[in-house]
Every structure is written in structure tokens, then in C-alpha cells.
Length: 495
Image 1 (cartoon, rainbow, N blue to C red):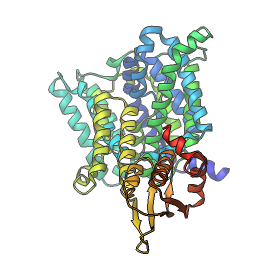
Image 2: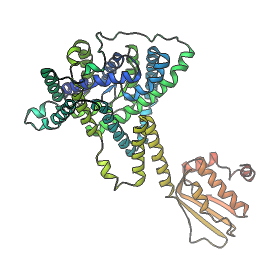
Image 3: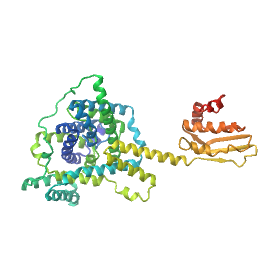
Image 4: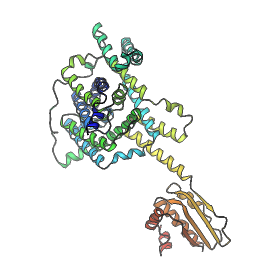
């Protein structure tokens, strides 16, 4: 217990504190922006980011990953807030958390193994593009000072690490924010700041229950939104966990993460915050700034609240150009540039899955839809590929009165039609032997194909014997097959 506590919390104190500071500063404008997207007061997003980050630091399954209010979740809240108000949003956020906790206990986090690498790459690239696109409003219709400050910020971020000793000690994004803020305040530069994004809260969050009627009508209103929030939140969190796993060469507990996200969202709703999830951009900032342990997430959440409540006058002076530079760094670092090179050598199916995921996520801003389409395409391509590996051979020792067919490979819905086509039903033979010793039948469709073959041969006057079934195939054939039933012909005729 002590070793785990030390490893997950206190094995990287300096790096976690510095990276948590960078994350906290970067969280403020994003939380405000996401609140505006959802149509609620900025303090709803800020309280949510504080609460979710602190709770997930204790209960999450992925040390070093940052969770807070996110744009993907905010987009799902717009209609609910517009039609029913903030209190219903808080209730929906609480129910979202309940669903996520249930998903953790049902071990649905394990479903991530069905998401292929090409889908993850497409998701990462799409998110990198969205992060960059989100910065464009801060770079359009502005004075040259903004471009100069942003360029200077990027210069600091990428060049500061080359300075001996100090360059490796302090995270360059933090240096970028501090230097540009000090410069802008010193010369009185008139550019957009964090304070222009919205009013910062001046008090700590308080515990409160959503003020909604506890009846079926309320449940029917919030249920669709809660389910959508739960799915998108878990999906983005699981994908982010996969990316952080790769960046840190460590593993995470997906089911614990589901439970942690759920409890965090329940806690957020009870403190006046909206639902959130893991943030790929902030998580990448945290990792690249040296954060590795739970302390970085905890410190980011606590410092965020301290800054917006007690240091609001100072924080409001941070130029948006400095934070834009940090987020551009995140988008550049997040994008998988290797995937562009790999387009030439990867199979066409893999490229299609990756590009389709990118296109749909960028076009709709719906992460869940993009990943769903990517997984669907990957599954279809996989099924088609496996289906081609099934063959039916005719043994050489077959005689004029007996024909032996040897089935090799996987027979399932994608290969069942091809399986039937291999057989010559018009051949004048008295006995047909179907050898399944090197085959595996997976589903009802494949069993139905076997029934079709056997019944067709019988109608041509041949005696059919099926041999060599393994235990799993025999089980599914016995359960769903009809060719070995007494009234097989009549059953098949009724189909």
C-alpha cells in the first residue's frame, strides 16, 4: 500500500507540480469556452474542472491523465440547457455519472480492445485538428501584436528546452505563459486576455442538489442526454488513456477509470458543475511538461480553483495568445505525423478506416460517431479478410460413388455464401462426406449454410455424412442446426 502510494503520488513531485501548474493555466480559458458552448455561466465549467480533476486524481485508473469539462461533452448539453435550464443539466450530469459507474462494474472498459490502432490514430489526428481549429477564432480579425505574441510563445516553447540546465528544469509552456503575461502587463499591450473570456467566480463551490422534480417526466427528459454524455465521456476517456499509455509506456485500469469518471461527474453535479471527461490536449500538456503521477492531476484541479477565486485579477491578465501558443504546441505534438508517411505502406483498408475516422470527427465534432464509424469499417474489412481465408477442398481419394469435401478455415456470416458455392450439387455421387476437422463454425448464419448444403445434397439423392467437428462447432451445430433433425426437409422448405 505504501509503495503504491509513493509510486502513484510522490515519485515525481517537482515534475508533477510544475506540469500541474501549466495544465491549470491552460484549463481556465477552455473551461470558460466550454461553458459558453453549453450555454451556462463560466463558473459551471470552472467548478466542474476543479471537481472532476480532484476526484479523478484519487479514483481514476490512469495516473497523469487530466479530466475536466470538455468541448465534446459541452456540445451534447446545448439543447438541454436551452430547453430546460441549468438544473436539468446538473441532474443529467449526475445520472451520466451513475451510468458510467455501472459501466465500470460491468467491465465495459474492456471493450476498448475492439478499437483498432487505425481508429485510435484517426481519433488522435482528428482531435489534433479540432484543437488547432479551436484556436483560429483567436487568430482571426486581430492585430499584428497577437500574431507576434503567438509566434514568440511558440519560439519559447520549442527553443527554451535547449537552454543548458534551466531548459530541462522548467516546462517550456509554463515559461511561455509567465514571460508573455509579464511582457504584456509591462508595456500595457492591448490584446485579448483570459478576463475577456468571461467573469471568473469569486467564491468556492457549495454542495447543492439539482432543483428538479423527482418524477418520471424528469427522468424521460434527462435520460437521452445522460446516456449520450456517458458514452461520449467514456469513449473519449478510454481513447485518451490509450494515448497516455503509449506516451508513458505504462498501462491503465480501464474499468477503474470508468468508475472514477462516473463518481467525478456525480460529484461535479452536486457542486454546481457540468459533466466532463478526460482531455487529450491537457493530458498531452501534462505528460510533455513532466507530469506522471496522480499528484499532477490533483494539483492542477486545486490550483485552478485557487487561481480563479483568489488570484482572479492576475489570471485575467494572461494573454490568450500565450495559451493559443500552448494549444498549437499540443495539436502539433498530438497529431501522428508518422501516419501520413504510413499511408504509402499500410493496406488500403487501414488507411480508409483512419481517414474516415478523421473526416467524420472533424466534420461533425462528434467523437463517438467518428469512432463508431471507424470501428464499424474496421470490423467489416476484418470480416471480409477472414472470410477469404476459408476454402473447401476435394480429397483425391474420392471415388465415383463417394465425394469427400474438406473444409479449411473460418465459416461465419461473411464466408457462409462462399462456403455453399464450393459444393457441386449436380454431381452424380451416392455418398458425400463433409470433413470439418480443420474448420470452425462461428454463428447461426454458418450453421444455416451447412444445413443448406446437406439438405441440397439429400434432395439430389446423396447420403451425407458430416465428420470432424470440434467441440465448439459441434455445440453451435447441435443447438441451431436442423439437417440432423428428423423433419429437416420440411423445416428447410419452410424457410
